Image (cartoon, rainbow over all chains, first blue to last red; front, side):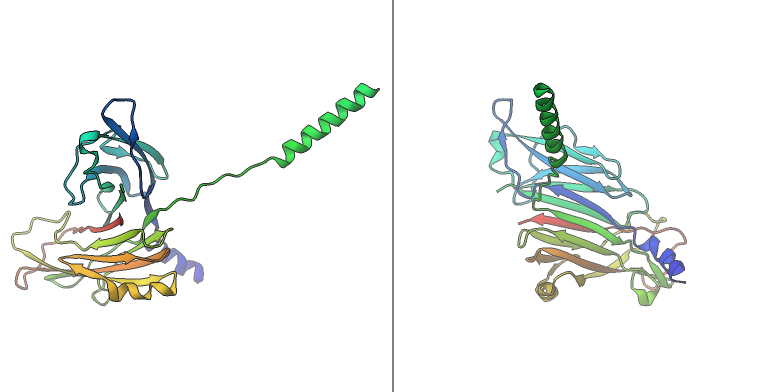
Length: 119
Length: 165
């Protein structure tokens, strides 16, 4: 009886998660003059998500131009991925947040967004 | 004979070093993990109403936040203000929603609910204590003035954000 109850509850308990580290990334000089770089790690434990979008923002949530290997990152379930974010030194002082947002597929009802802060 | 004994002694010592040197390394860093504990389901208690409230036959979506450092993150949860997919609707939909703390891993988090800040459809919580917090978000959509929703499948998205402070 308990097993039946557990089976009935399982579809509502499919825990899925999204994680990005570090919380406080720091930019360093890159191999290109005038460009700084930082590295972040993304972990996809969401079966219902295959893509994450990366964004860089000011403290007023205005977008800041950046370059990365990906803007939309394709990620399989349980994938961990490191990615670099390159920003011009001219706009480095305005960078406040680096965010990853799950790209929702049909059927998902929760979108997750994690933002690291550049201090 | 002497050389043989030395060789055996060396072998034995090298074996023991190999046997004891099995490091397990790890790195703990500040992090925020957003977990969808329960996906929401709309109930349809009236022809003009879709609701995730259990009293209306729905399932309230539950999102869990795990933070490993106190006072490092804000949790922002936004209830839907539109359907992400639905049949074609010709009239307006009125949305209401609310988010509340449903469970915590630490008794000290009991103040989160009283300290929450709500603006528009977004509710913000200051995660001042390390640990896990579960948030549930109720949403209701009412179609036109008591108009019946068109038959079909409806999906709406709750946005769960974890913003470093």
